[in-house]
Image (tube, rainbow, N blue to C red; front, side):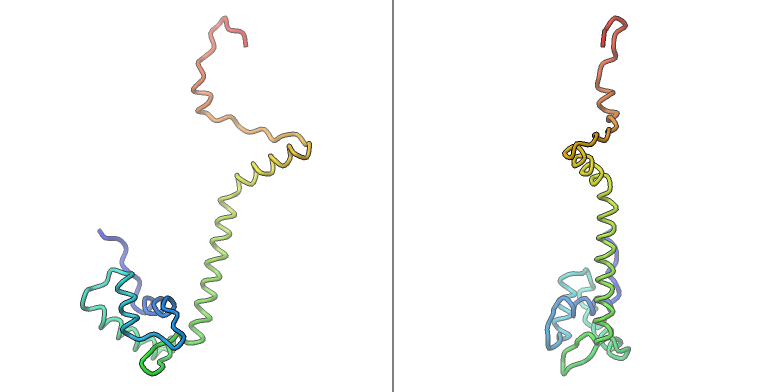
Length: 140
């Protein structure tokens, strides 16, 4: 299998307009090319699907048609910016959550610098398994 299917064309069109970043709006041809370059879409049918998605988005108020170009509506831009900020905050929280043990080691290292007692670390099991067993007469 080639992978997961691409998102709906309405979402692809919005991503294309964001990705093209044209101040005066993006043409249907440019939007179609952007989508075809980045997603696995049907070789000939994608143009009709892009056209239909553009018409539906204009009718729903998500896009604004400016001459022969399309722009995101102000409401849609605000919605996408908020979603991007939420996504960014979520990634930062995940990064902080995954950095938990590393921060503990940093705190332990700083504790040694200030003169407090070091934090004991558990010994890895592999290190114990690699040591040969002590003979009965060996003195530790």
